[in-house]
Image (cartoon, rainbow, N blue to C red; front, side):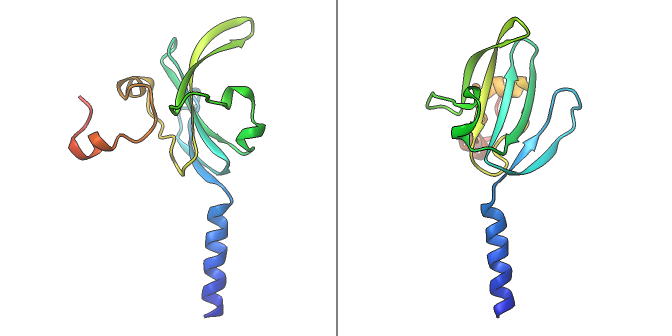
Length: 128
């Protein structure tokens, strides 16, 4: 019985260590899983119809400003500057295991710019 209790404590402790997140960058196009993350993210670039997914191992309060989604939705359109160029990206953050399913940009757009689960269509049929 003692061994069973220790095993349960170790399993629960491992789950409490962090989240598992889908990981996909637009260059390799290979889906992977990142473990022990503090939050998961998805970034969508409408100009290129591209997406990147992953997780961050630092606490959201210490993360860069771009990860601070201030709206009441899970995704927000933000302006970015890189190499002297300004462009818009959708930044999505979530805080549950595997919550950042690697949707393509077209799927993301059809879901009304959210990565949150769509329970209505899950029960009543796929998006048309």
